[in-house]
Amino acid sequence: MSNNFSIISPNDGQTIATREYANATIVNETIGRAKLNIRDWHSLEFEERLKILKLFIKIFESKKDIIAASITEQMGRPIRFTPGEVAGVVDRANKMLSIGATALKKLQHENDGNIERYIEREPLGTLLIVAPWNYPFLTVINSLIPALLAGNSVIIKHSPYTALCAETLVECLLKAGLPSGICQFLHLTNEDNEKLLRNEGIDGVIFTGSVNVGRRVEAATAGRFIPVGLELGGKDAAYIRPDADISFTAENIVEGALFNSGQSCCGIERIYAHADIYDDLIDQILKSSEAFKLGLPTLHETMLGPVINKHAAEKIQCQIDDAINCGASALLSKQNIDHLPDTGTYVSPQFLTNVNHEMTFMKEETFGPNAGIMKVHSDEEAIRLINDSEFGLTASIWSADKGAVKNIGRRIDAGTIFMNRCDYLDPSLTWSGFKNSGRGYSLGEYGYLQVTRPKSFHLRSI
Image (cartoon, rainbow, N blue to C red; front, side, top):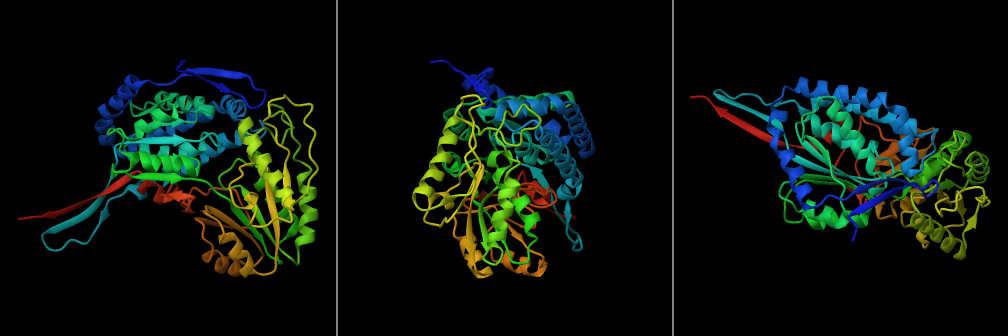
């Protein structure tokens, strides 16, 4: 059996590159290198580590055109948008570096006579970052920057769909002067990745992906007592109150549902519109959806490209078809894809009305360019329906009344509450999920807690 795998573009079904899965020897050598230089890396002055990571960001940004084209080729996001991920990486990394000194500073407690007491943040050791394909650089950078700045070594296991992204990150870091072995990548099968999770050389895990795979990560690390951060699925909801700006709201909700072909952990998948504005919202959604025409993502005019693979496309369409068979109505006409490559990866965008929570489409994560729209008659009904989900990543409330939004947000089971925006990660805040959307933190000062542990010092002078 071949140990090679191919990276195939969803755009046209062509093979981009072929790589070899790491065997046990390569895995052990990688862990060995990660351990070899970690003390020297951690013992470097904070400012030296900061200097290397700032240079890494400059090198990464200098390759923005090549990296943007690579994202489009590997996972199908239109080329007009992929430079935005490069810019997002630069912005997010710089912000995480800017708060590093505060997040990692020694917590000094009041001395008591001859007793000095304080707490230091110590790196965990060697961290494994298991990254997804949908935002192949941003999802890594969320944890990579704080992990390295705190003094950890890192091994990146990227999705096989976007495996080249891990190689790019390591290449840029080495060019910036990062010592050998401090950041490496491994291309692994799912089975070998689970073996790596059980390896005693791994001191912490940060995983982004589906709930089902998250459970396997949890099972593989059971009994090892290491920190495991899990960012899992979502079925994120939007609630539009009667006082919302309907034109602005519709435009942003359509983008939140369709951008990146709906393949965003915090993309809008459920919409609850107050009865007073429901009809107006439907009209505006129809207008705003017109811009999202399926096309080749390599063309600059394309707003909507393929989903990651044929299996994903079939799952999305199955959920839509099942909902329609159960009484849902399609709001948008199906787009003609005869002019596109016959890859099975191009999915027509869709909004469904007459949906309910008995439908899989409104309960399970779809991860496609679509969303369901339900009419509600009060804040209470909207809160109940939003919370009627196994997920709790984000929720957005569209209103002119900030006080009402705050009160509603406190009663919603979600890690982030937005007002008049959606599908966004604020690096100054903390990214976390409720319920099956995961456990642990990234971004903000809390993101540094995920990659360090406290060490207390109680010093008595005699």
